[in-house]
Length: 505
Ligand SMILES: [Zn+2]
View 1 (tube, rainbow, N blue to C red):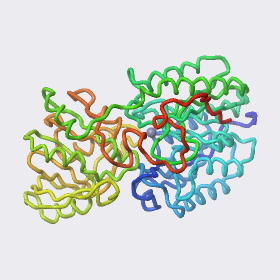
View 2 (cartoon, rainbow, N blue to C red):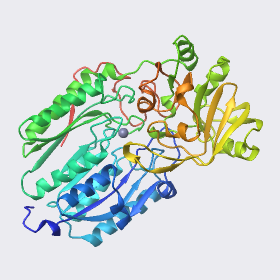
View 3 (cartoon, rainbow, N blue to C red):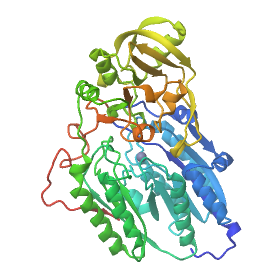
View 4 (cartoon, protein in one colour):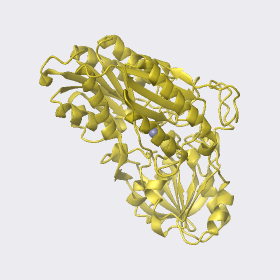
């Protein structure tokens, strides 16, 4: 594996299939879903200048190596991928890799919590397939989201797994660079990575999962990262598993890569997992019914008060079509300005057909994923219409043009409902800004994500209330009926006598 050839002749394959999937809700991901978001082939992959692929390409060019682009497919969270979609993308990815052989190494930008209909570990499957093609001596370095479900297959077949260090996620670019640097250090014969993952069955939502300030996860991340200062430690990663999957052996914890010292990797990974277990109670959020949250919010001077309807998080795979918070705001009959997003293509189309200024009664909500409630007839006025186009201002999709499809602002009393045709990932508040609403003038804003509302409103929110509502991305996993995830797990089981971290290696 030693680097004996000129660097300009080093060829590194780059490609991946990236998304995060939900077993409890969301629409299935098919090939059209990727085509509507990001599906880049061959030289199109080389155009990436941001996010993880941008970071990998920048680092490869800095090493004067030649990137060999495969395909890169990426989209917002949703239900599991269809088998047909996965197999089509996988075939194309590896057909391109086969044509490109021999390569000196492989970089796989993946998520770690994708699902396929009938296959719970597509990332492990992809890494395994890459290993079969390139053989045991070519390094395979994989980047993951820190919400990955790290499996034995992933640990066994990759040389190194390296995760984002930030949530809200804004370090995809530098993660791509770190992964590429490690791959080059391996090619140069500098390091021989040995890897272990320590897991404990802690399944919580991401509400207290920030890596900033005094959140428990931030503490754990600082502890995990401090280990990178130790001799022979090449990289450490901390994982809060994406909790809305139903797979065996789910858990959170730490992954440690050492230089040819598997015992040290196991020891440190087990130590991180042990600490994670100790902080489990701090990771469970306090939540309120929407009506109680609104009452509490009314006692807060000024606004905005953020009502976090995390159970309907499009970024976690939900359809975004819940009206639990909307109904509570309307039922409270309060004359304060409020903003609520709802995905409902039929209602959006009716607003567009009626035209701006029209008054009408339309059923809104729970049509895309009706398992969590029923639509309700609301009477209001069409205040604004748009095509729903906007551009992300940060994060993984920084600069990416996104489309909500036909979008309307529908006013019910003092509540402004942003009715969108397509679910999109929340970074800050691009979706609200693009329809001309000013969040600083709202008393209540419904945010349908567990974390990124802090980016949009963290500086000026007067209060934040976590809502206890139904949906495929709930604030606690205590009451979820898992079929494949075995008991005991926290928070359904508060104490697990004799628990020891599971070590994957
Ligand atoms: Zn994530």
